[in-house]
Image 1: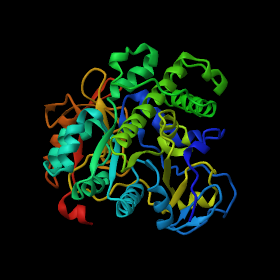
Image 2: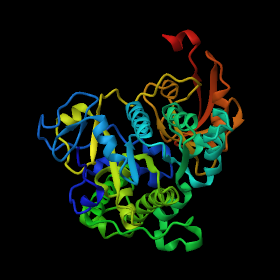
Image 3: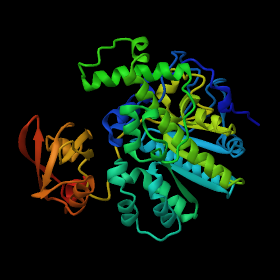
Image 4: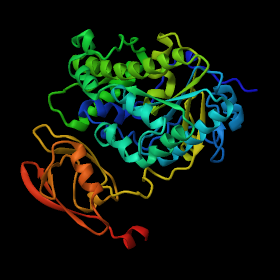
Length: 428
C-alpha cells in the first residue's frame, strides 16, 4: 500500500519552475487561449541523474523516487475528493494518459465526475446534453464555441468527451469567460464589481513562492511583447508594480474559478471522485488549483501529471505532484486530422478580422507563409468577424482545394493561399 503525499503538505515549498507556466501567463496578456500552448516542458530537472530513470509507462513518486503500479496509484487516488490530471494542451501523449487514467478511476469507482478547463460555465447545459447523448460531435463543438473559446485541436480532446458520453459520466465546466480574466489582468480583482465576478469569491492570497515565480513569468511575458514601457528588470522590481499585481490577480482568479467549480461538484456528489482536466501550470507544485481548494476546505486532493521520460531522467523536483507518469516525447504534433485544419490559434482582432496568435509548425498555415501576428480579414472573399466564421469556411474545404486569405501584416494587405492536400497527399 503506497501513501501518496497530499497537496496540503506542499504549500510551504519555496521552489517553483517559472517556465512551467510561461505560456499560461502569456494567455492572460494576449486574451487568447491559443497562446496558452504550454510549451514542451515536462518539469524542470534538479540535475540528479538516473534517480527517476524508469521506462515509459511507469509511475514514480517524485519525492522518494519510488516506482508504483497503476493499481497502486489509482487505488490511492480514489480515496481523494478531487483528482487533478495536468496536461500540456497540445500533447497527444498527455491526453492519451488522461484517458487511461480516467478509465482506471472509473473501473475503481462508478461514481465519477469529470471537469474540464476547456469549457466556461456558460456552456454547462451543452455539456449536459452531450454527456446524455443528445448532441452530435459537430453540434457539440459548435455549441460550446470550441474554436473560439479554447481553440486547440478538438481531436486531442474528443476521446475524453466520448468516454464521458459512452459511460454517461457527468461533465462540468471549470472555467469562466475569458473576458473576466482579461479584465482582472488589466485592472485588478478589486476593480471588478462583485456582481460582475461570475460568482467567484475572493481568491486566497498567493504564497510568496508563487508570487516570485509569477513575477519571473511576468518579466518574460513583457519581454515577449517587447513593451518598452515596462522597464523593470528584476523579480523584486516586478513584485512592486501595479501591472504585476493585476497579472497575479488574474492568475489567482483563474485558479479560484476552477477550484470553486470542483469544490461545488464534490459537495453536490459526496460519493463521487471529481477529476479535473487542466493545464499543468494550474496543477503542479500545489500553488494553483490545489491551494485554492485548500482555502475552500477541500484538502483531500491528489495531483497527477505526465512527464517526458528523458526529462525525468534528468531529475524531478520533489513537490511537482503526488505522482508522475512517464511518457515518451513525441512532440506536440497533433494526430492526423479527420477534418480540414489550417493550423492556427485565432482570436478576434483589435480592429476587426482575426488575429493569429500561433501558427503550428508543419501546418497548412505555415506552408502558406502565415505568421503569428497576422490579421486575417477574409477567406474566399467572405469577411471574417469571429473565429467561428473561419472555422466554418475551413471545414467546407475539400481535399486538394486552395483557399485565398486576405491578410493584414504590419499595415500591408496581402493575399496568401492556403493549399489543402489531396487525399493522396494526406495518406502519404
